[in-house]
Image (cartoon, rainbow, N blue to C red; front, side, top):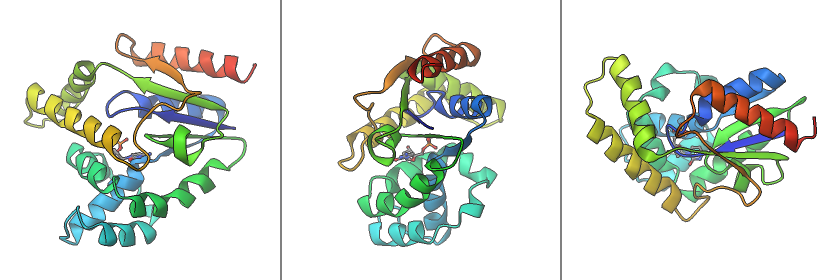
Length: 208
Ligand code: DC
């Protein structure tokens, strides 16, 4: 079983993916971490994020053991990840790792931007998680404030809007809902309600 969960930044898809995987006893891969790790390693070598050939070389030699580095979760790394993610050579280099992960038994949940469209187009369950951009920015802003980061709401909103545009506007594997994806709008839902709604959708889809 493969459950593909896509959606924009701060939509709640990551938390949802982990909860769903735990509920069904499946493996879980946050594919954004792969792009974040490439961006981290490019920056650590003081190279430009716009250097496609270099970023692709980093992607081809990425050490999956470094994906639990807490630094990858920083918002600035997410923005940098979205820059390297626009390069076809980077995306191609990360494809096998994601598909291998998806093949595990009894199942896998992958979350990202192109799981239902490109990485696992045959996934039996696809969910596209959305939420109003202002609500997503508010969630991200509160999270950053809790961590003591000096940010303003307007700045967070601007960064999220720019990231949405970059992720949805790129030519290769843009963020979009697969034609057979179920849409889950979490604008007015908390995590518990979103989770219950998602599990209900999955059970209906797989006929449990
Ligand atoms: O989900 P995230 O915020 O950790 O993702 C960081 C960036 O990585 C995102 O802005 C675009 C890129 N990404 C992607 O292009 N495809 C994916 N499947 C996952 C992430």
